Amino acid sequence: MNEIIEIGDEDEVSDLDLARRIGDALCKLYPDHPWMVSFQGRGLVIRHLAIANAVALELGREGFSSLLPRDKLGTYGEMMHSVMQFGGELLEAFGLPRGKWDGSPPIVPKNWKRKQDRNFH
Image (cartoon, rainbow, N blue to C red; front, top):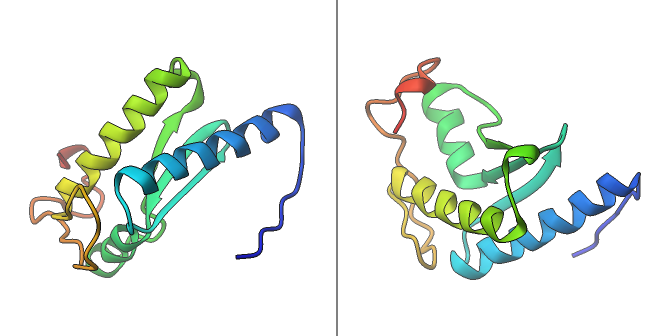
C-alpha cells in the first residue's frame, strides 16, 4: 500500500498518529473489518466501509460515519476504551460479528429510518 502523507501543524501530526493507532487497535480487535479512521475538524471520525455502503443503499444516506469530538475523548486510555466499545456496539447494531469479519453483509436495523437518527439504538 502506498501512502501520501501531508504534514501540517502539530495538531494535525498528532491527529494522524492517533488515527493510525486507533485504526490499528480496531483492526487487531475486530480483524478483517474495513475500518477507516480519520480526524476532521478536531473530531475523530470512524467508518466501517461495509456499513456505510449498506446505509447508502438502504437509506440513500451517503457518508455514514460516527463523529467523536476530540475534546470529549478523555485520556488516551479512556479514548481507546471508548473506541473499542463503540466499534463492537456498531458491529452488533448492524448484525456483524465482534470478532473476525467473515464478509457477511451488514443489516441496517429495521427501526432506523432516514432522518430519524435519534431513534437508532
